[in-house]
Image (tube, rainbow, N blue to C red):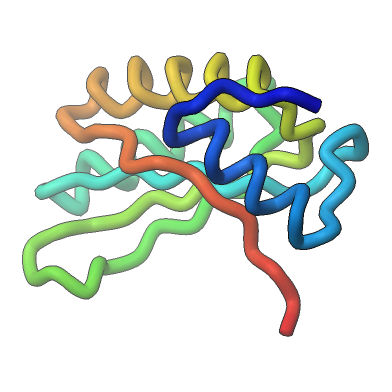
Length: 109
């Protein structure tokens, strides 16, 4: 599979090299950052009430005064799916005065 030469493509290529089958659904985590805990919790509530089927975790960031909202979605990690979901989370995060801070997968081990 040929992947675009950008940040998303590089991460997907690394996943492929690590033996992850990109044609099968996996848990992908999208990260949102907020300066206000209330805004982080409002985004989490909004996602939980939507039809996104995401598991959401709100926690304090390592940086003081920053709150993280980690949204895990089981999906096929195609380039197109990742880009579309990043755009969706960017719009949602902005709605609550936050921003999307990328994505990743949590590997065992």
